[in-house]
Image 1 (cartoon, rainbow, N blue to C red):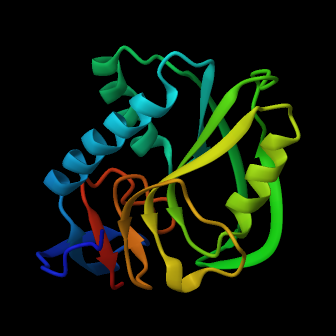
Image 2 (tube, one colour):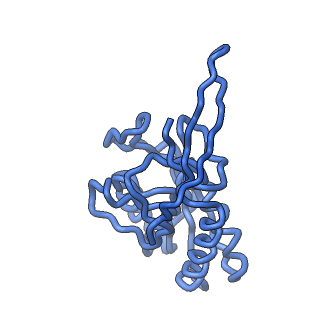
Length: 196
């Protein structure tokens, strides 16, 4: 499903150095309401897939933590209580991917004979998530699937397809709902196009 092209303007001020004031412009791409609705829909699909199985949901830090938290809270309605773990890895420097992937925090749970679902905020070039999928598969998981809130297909550099997708978006730099710009704006309850 494509994200809505109806925009709401948002402006914010940010004080940084001394007396300098920076004006930030954003346009809402996906509303808080649309995200909540999509999380409920994804939770229903995941409950059908994973109910009655020994599953581990692996959140990708930092961007995926908000999405994962909302998703697993919704799963209690289906009596699904997956084990939760986190990884932290990156291939980005600033806003561009370097192609070199570093693991800063690996999973701590034993994944042997477990069904694993990677939960992340966005699938972009695909390099990091393809690497992670292969990395977790080597830990003995019976299967490793991928759930992303946002899919930016136009930026894909490797062959990887998510199993569960919230929204497909164009080639925008987006913030909010876990996504950041210089570690800010993760707390926004919607997804916005960041325009500087």
